[in-house]
Structures are given as structure tokens and as C-alpha cells.
Image (tube, rainbow, N blue to C red; front, side):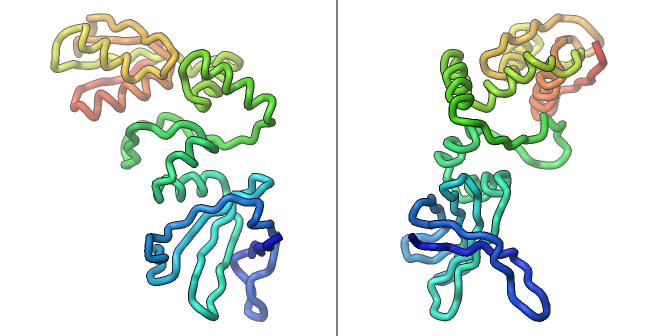
Length: 226
């Protein structure tokens, strides 16, 4: 057993950080930002890394290979772990523990929010059932969970989006709607009507995605409750 202490990250005027837990690193997984020379984001011989313990806890560490300097580890939440892994291009790990990584993502301010991220723990039996259900439909684990929750609680309030499309054809407008519709769901039909040329009625989540796509294309659009 190789014991790694987890600190509270703070300490007081009279003492250093307190030990608030530990884990066996021989039974944990480790990812770090060291390059082929052993240097990380902290400079020569120093950097960052993330552990996932046998119990599924995420731990952030600042490591050092310098004599007299200690590696200091603190707990981190799952969302922070996911962000660190994405930043350091461990996409396969993110997909293993958090679900599919989007092919494209724009985090700039000012875009309509498509929904907050939720992290939850599921037992192995339930997780296996979700994965089987997702595989049957050719969708990701995260999308399967979202669809099942919507089926239980109902989807977001139905809205109507009126929008312009410079291409002018209803077929082209329908293609944009299809791209904004979650995998495994039927795309709502576009109608050629309204002041801007086209309208579509769907759940609020699809409308939010579609509005973001249209604004990226420089099209006009506005939403009303159906």
C-alpha cells in the first residue's frame, strides 16, 4: 500500500494544512500534465495531476520532483475533474466517466444556456441498464439519461421559434433544425410562415439549441410560447 494524504488546502496561522483523508495510490488511477521531459504546468519538475481513487473520489494534486518539495493533494468535485481532464486532452477518460465529449462546444458568454450540467452516481446494475438502452438507440449515455428523465417528468415547455434563413428553401431550414435536434429524437417540422419566413414548434431544449445555431449563422429569430 502506498498511502497518499489528502489535505484541507488551507491551514491556520499556527499549523499547516490538516489531513482530512487518504487513499491507496496503488489502487487508484492517475493522470498528470508532465511532458516527455518530466516537466508540467508548474515549470521544471513541477505540475498538476488528478487521481481517481478506488472509491471513485476525485483528488487534485500539485506534484514536484524537487528535493524538499512535497506533492500536495486536495479533494475536487467531479465537474472540476472533468474540466481538468478536458483541458489536458484526456478525452477518452472523460468519455469513460462522464459521457460523450461533444464534437464542438462554444463557451463564450452571451449564448443561450442549453442546460446546466448535473453529476450523479449510479449503481452498476442501473448503469448497465442505461448503457444497454443507449446502445440500442445509438446514443450516448448522457443523452439516454436525459431522454429517460424527460419521459418521466415531461420535456421543457413547448415554444415556437420564428426565424429567417438566407438559403430561402424549406429543405435547408429543415436541415438546420435536424442538426439542433438531440440524437435519437425526431426533428420537428418546419413551416413556411411568419414575418421572418419560417417557424418551428418544439420543446424548449430543442428551441434553445436551434436559436444558438441560427444566431451563429447570423440569422434573425425570436421565441414565443406555443
